[in-house]
Length: 114
Length: 111
Image 1 (cartoon, chains in turn blue, purple):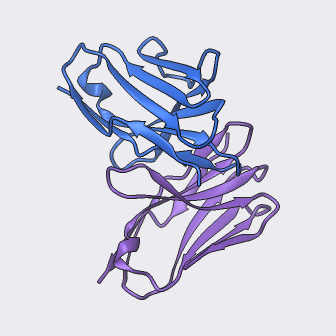
Image 2: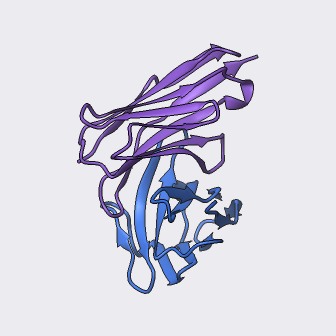
Image 3: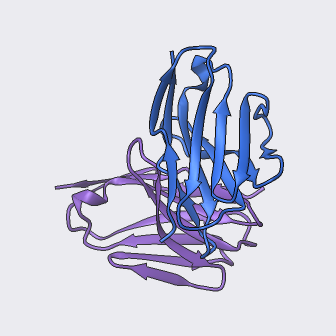
């Protein structure tokens, strides 16, 4: 079945630094990928839709200059959290729509900003 | 805007019991509905996908039903096992790329 690989699974960084998270579709091409954020004991909140070869579409309230998204190929999307602050600490998950019209999710990245 | 609600928020059952998780959505114009499982600190694992034209899907001990007109879906788990303990999320797709998640049901199966 469709597999989405997300790296790293866990990262700790200092305030003010930037962190890049990668999301790869391993056995299918994904013209569109999605980035979600999840706070403890809450459901997923869509942050942005990543489109291959064009600009990402951000949800209301999500700062595009802070959460940079690049979708340079049909199998890779990256999310860079710039100038990270402790309030950016969260669980970030990417997904892609697979050939069966369902969504396949990555394993998530736990970001802790200290 | 589509709103997805899951009831109950948490559920504890003894091992071996059958159980039903509920999902309701406000806008019946959906493409499909997907049930996921999420283990603590992990990503989402797709369990079942029901297209809008379908009424149910089955996979092993899992059966998901869809009543689009009433805006409801259920996930039935037969003969529950401790390994089934996780948070179960339903999500409805309403547009080309619009996926709306429920708040989840945290299931604990007690050995």
